[in-house]
Length: 208
Image (tube, rainbow, N blue to C red):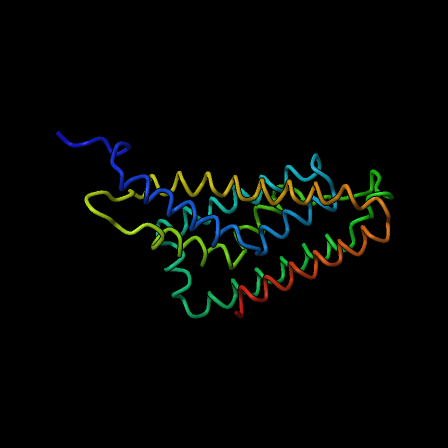
């Protein structure tokens, strides 16, 4: 009789390796994670939840695209790859502008326009780092050991949960940081720093 998968020691070791790889590679600073923190800092928790969910859903969409091999087909098209990179960079620059020009915490009123869930979704699917990071984790984080192998559906579920956890953590960090930004000058400087960091991480993802 075949031993249940959950009771096999190799299973838990591979799952742990997958989670740790996702935490290090997918959870590192990049356009999506930095933008979630920046939006949380600039607009607060309540106004940022929609954007954060957009980022999460968009990143899960990237996970599905990578897992099904669609991304390999797209990037293999010579004329399409540069076009996608240009569109991604243009949209992320627009979002960086929105963050940089967000009203300071102390001066915020009804006129403040927080990026929507659709803005988060579009940034996630336009994020060049996401495709590389997710592909690396999905393909090579947990090689087969012994008689146990993590199936693709289990990898998908585990990585989807990690996507939720990673972006929720970055959002909470941004919201917690915002509590120290009651002075308009400090709030403005931090918004500018986050916007510049978003542009820098995008540039590194595309050209690094």
